[in-house]
Image (cartoon, rainbow, N blue to C red; front, top):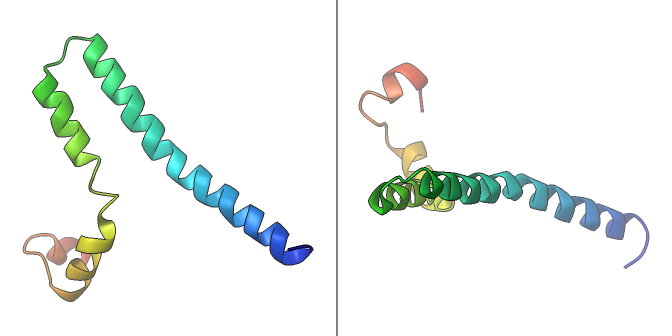
Length: 78
């Protein structure tokens, strides 16, 4: 691959990497800081489970598009 398609591919790879990097850095730094400050391992595990939500967005996003969530849809819409 040479020329414009190769440049676009490199650009898209860099953009994808830079978009996912903050999630990883936030989770790693948060876990280390919580452990260093003596937070219970159960609480740290809870934060790890909450961090899974963006990873599985492809599962729950279509459900939110199809069905309205009580209390949430009234203020924010579909």
